[in-house]
Length: 291
Image (cartoon, rainbow, N blue to C red):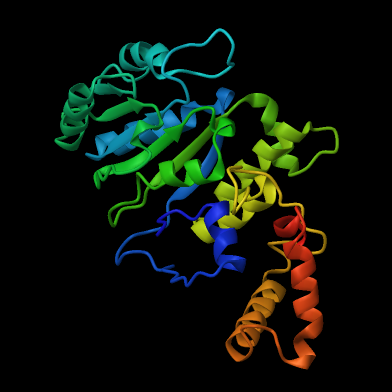
């Protein structure tokens, strides 16, 4: 059971022996979260919205990918920016700090204080990704959003919009992404940067977790169903898991009917299927070539 669909789960439901129930309706009264991209040079847009929401009695999250500044990773950190946010950007509001390196009792204390509205802004890492339900929080700013995967961004966005008020998610990224996001595509963009752009534009185009999972599967693949790889495109010869989903579903139903009618494949008109199955079963590349 998955609240946030991920490529691996999605691919298992496409051609695995699984029954699935899809719940696409939002809880009554909730509104889709408005998602916007901001850049380092336009980050004040997000800060202004945070201040407006706080003045209206709401709360906000600001998320960073790192706990502390790294010499090797070019990304912002929660500890590094906590002091400047508290003293320079939001000096009139109470800010809390939360990250995974804190002792469990300190993390629990910070979350209780935020829930009790002792903090108006929670500066955190992705430790708040799941299990956090603060209905009064209506805005989230995710710094270095290009570094996160789609499923993670969708989970983080889900920390707001948990009431009947309009909530906003800001995806902050570097200025050098600005031209390419505005142009949607560019042939000279490196593959990693192109993938990051695709993730960000997907997030602003939909709140549907299933569409996000499909986009995620196209970008990084579902990995191995029978193995340990968590990403990568399966080396199928003829099947595209996304574009051929209708064909996969048809084949799956047909195979189920054949197995139900002739589980041992002994009927004459099933001899070709039986021979091909036996050939593939003896092959080391059985799961690779079965599609």
